[in-house]
Image (cartoon, rainbow, N blue to C red; front, side, top):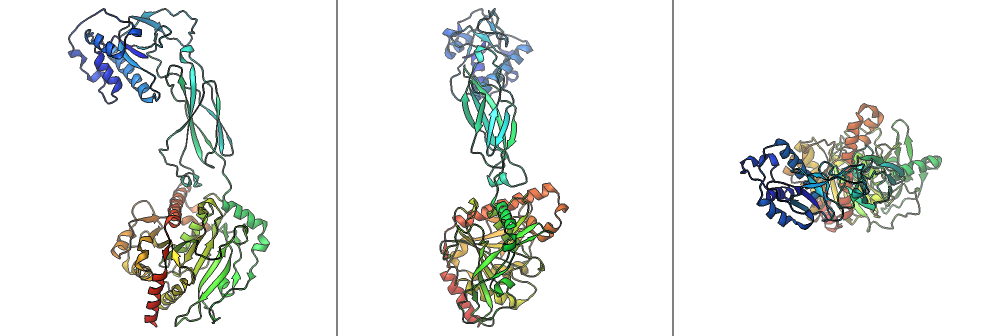
Length: 589
């Protein structure tokens, strides 16, 4: 029970304690209350709050002392704080009279003789019904535990603290360890675990005799804030201790394991190897535009570029399709490749693509589609900003920005190598960019190649159009939009998404133009993939670290949204879309 003595207007004070939005004492205009005095007093043990209000309402104390008003205001503030933080409901606030009570002292014990002194207007009295009432006006809330010391072991933190008991009145019944993860850092762990700036504290209660606690099952590589407070024997809560911070140890990512695997097997992985490739078409002629690895039917070797500090991942061609439409009949148009098949061979590639989640990328040349695919694959493999090397799937070294990096339609099959895959196989379809320097005939070739795409995939989960954030020119965006919309049937419209590359803070300028062209972009994903561009990798020190960290986090948040999209969207059949493309190609012929 916490009691406030001798207040001249008990009902008013009671309202102040229980109504946090009430006015302060200084705003109550107590000087308007007519003077009255009374020497009446009541035993606190026999008085409940209703009785106290009735008793005190008949005896309104007239006072003008500003110190009394300040004392009342401070007492009410303390009581409201205790009321708001007391979750157990075992504290009762009573307004009443008490002429004398024992003063509280940190040095006193139960055996100490406490001489009672006169209680002042506005004093806060502690009465447990057993021991003599105690004046605790200037000692609420109670002393906080010491600042905790933290010891990190892997993904656990052992918290230790000390607590000096004020006396037997304030013996701790339990301690509460409060902890929460904090955002920040430039390696992406905080955003990966979706840690926000206003993350709430998690509380763990331990015995009042304990002075340590182990927090287990924490996120790896994340900074944690830890505080301690005590729940005292009377139900009071102490102040919280100062915060301590510690970062859990990072677990090795799949990207780091891949890098170790490469260096351990560098000689074998870097050697090109020929294999038998299935050619369903009777024609064996090949397109001069096809990449060397596809034209020769080889496994693309792994390669570590020391200048760029990047590992270009290898893959194996499992199947190809030649174009069956004129004028490109017999030229290689589509290839299916298995990414890094040498790594963890016990995780097998599926026999077909029916159970895979399919994500198709499209866009004009130079709009960051290949760079976006590299960033997405790095994300799936757990790549981080501070990795020893960047993971790259598509090799765009030596390719002009005006030309398309992708020459044929390529299906990259990815096994679930990390938790980011959600246990699912993912197929990334990389389509050649439109409007490159090779002219209209090149765009016609892409149309013919896309017709053969549907020989491999009979469904998609999402189609992502890559577009530069600042691109507003209709004549650049319209061909890409028109092509994608005419490539698929109307049943795919709900699965069309926009990936906005080269993004910064604010709404992308391209969105307005895309909407005018009829592209559904109410939901768009912003990314800034500078960390995967060759220009940046060749000159990493040119960008401020804080800017780079911010851009990386933006990119990885975008990849997270893209992953959730492709894993949660239902399969959309490509049968109708295949018919649409076939009819269009017949008309062109």
